[in-house]
Image 1: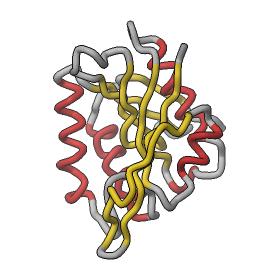
Image 2: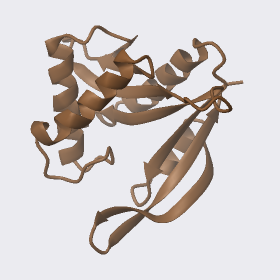
Image 3: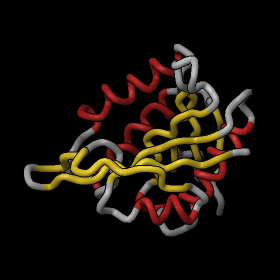
Image 4: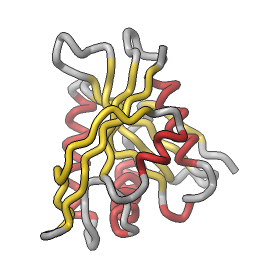
Length: 174
């Protein structure tokens, strides 16, 4: 069964808690979404609140994927640029698919839904994202149409002695 995607769903307590659970489960499964396992919901909560603040200030939009039971199974945040010379592209942050749903094509579906959502926004011509090196994520994003446009060596410190590249990817929407 495919996920149902919604741009700007109402942030009900169920959606809020679903996002917290999703981010926690993805992080604890080794997903490269800003944390290193083990983490719990209370460690992630302040970062989610920052996303909610950006949404309230119209600087970000939530794209959520819901499974057949209505639970949050995937999510990403589309974040606008505030620099006046860069408003023609946006960032895609915190791209997540729940570990129990991995391998079903939902990651590709999420990225396609994000591209469709970005295309629906006035003046947006491209999506940029970054990913952590060492996980093969750049190959996945590349297979979804993103092009690698740069790398910063040792920019991400996962643990002492474990530094990773920060890889910049771009998807043209035109």
